[in-house]
Amino acid sequence: MNKKILIIEDEPAIRKILLEPLSAAGYQVTTASDGLEGINTFHAASFDLILLDIMLPKMDGYAVCEMIRQESNIPIILLTALDAEDNQIKGFDLLADDYITKPFSIKLVLKRVEALLRRSSSDMVSDIIRYKEITLCKSERKVTVSGNETALTHLEFEILLLFMKNPGRVFSRDDLLNLVWGYEYAAEEKGVNFHIMNLRKKLNVGYIETVRGVGYKIAKENA
Image (cartoon, rainbow, N blue to C red; front, side, top):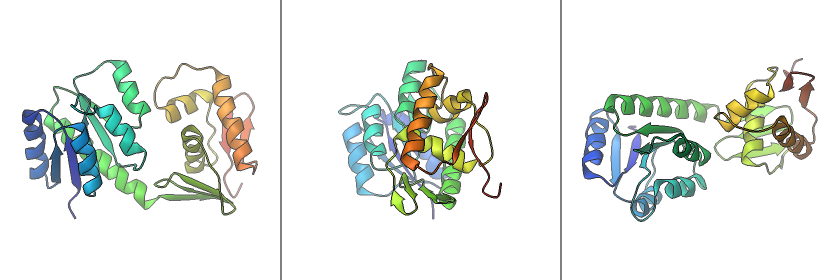
């Protein structure tokens, strides 16, 4: 089945620039011309990826992204003329998956779309990860320990996901900041320690080990 893409963009010329090559590449493309229409269109059908402009009438792209993220992990690529670092960081804080600045190369857009859809399909294959008594479901953002659901914050969930995907690997505090927060984050080491401490308390199984002077890990199951 062809992948379905929703373009939320208020400029007709840019909608056309995106619509034609994406359709020619075999994608089923639907468009919306403002943020409110975009949200309504998203709710009216099922999509595999969203191309989302930031500067939209009625509701800006940041608000649209935030609303969609409250109910879906669909891949989102932000499209915007705002190329300042703060704008990009805000987009990633709202859990957008990628960020492309205007003017853009349509070849670049096609490659980013292809890569993100490929990664998303791969993630669905391995949606459930288990480690001893812990079961983590990525699509539902759900963690259970011995069958009992454990409520985690976004950062706690991402830290646990990183550990469970890489048993035996030691992650330094800098590694966790870069890989979990997703950008160069200005914080003290005690910030990472705080999240690890809370995660350990909530899981209450003792699998997150401190490697003195290096960082943290969970051991391989057969270790």
